[in-house]
Amino acid sequence: MNVRIFFSFIIVTSVCQNYHCMFPTNFIYNDRIMATTYTYFRDPRFTYTLYIPASSSPLSFTLTVLIHGIQRNVEAMLDSYKEFADQNQCVLFVPLFPEGQHYIELISPSGNIRYDLLLLDMIDEMKNIHHNHQTINIDKFLLHGFSAGGQFVHRFGYLHSHRLLALSIGAPGSITLLDDSLEWPEGTKYLRSIFNGNDIDFQTFKLLPIEICVGDRDHRLENAERLKVNYVEDAGLFNVRFDIVPNAGHDSTKMKEVVSQFFQDVLRR
Image: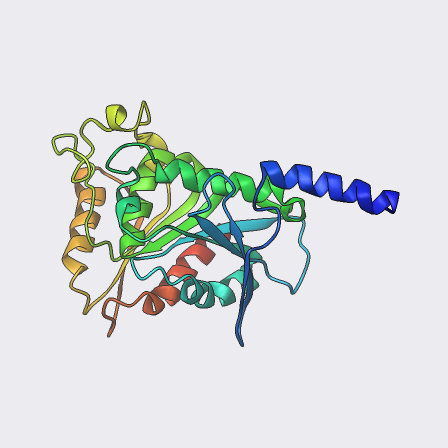
């Protein structure tokens, strides 16, 4: 056997025993986008898909994380924000959670899965294992979710605001108010005990640029308005943007213009 080939085989085999996702597991191709899907090595039930703009090679890409709703349509989310990514040198990162909606509350009923920490570990894996992604800045990232994804992201923001450049909350079906008189997930009472010591860093969250967006024909409009009132009037947040999209129902693709503009405004500050 050729020594060089044999040596390479040993290295690849050894690495793959520890990191099952060293190689892409799927590709998304259509007439607009090409993206790569990887299996999360700690738990193959989870995957994440990356879109990296090919037009240029900047020293650093900004990471944009998109969280799907219960339809789990990764391709639609990638397609909606490809233009934003191309224009702003952003990498799109879309995790795929297994069927079921436990992720929206950040923690499984049994308490053995923390979906917020799982997302952060996926991001670390992408950066640390796939060495061709070293130009992606993961210290702080843009985060958007729609519907069930909107539920996930605003709860994620409470615990991890220090990791976010901006937070976009799209038409959440249920909301968690900044209210210590209400138990999780309706409010933030007992948050520290539920999440093993994690709590809201209110001063950091207060400075975070936040967008709440919803269609004017969406039956979740009332929830979105209630969350805005809680943030601005009850909690005193001053960096909250509220976008009502005209002639839009519960449709994630209708949000792409306002979300893209919001993220672009943040990046240009």
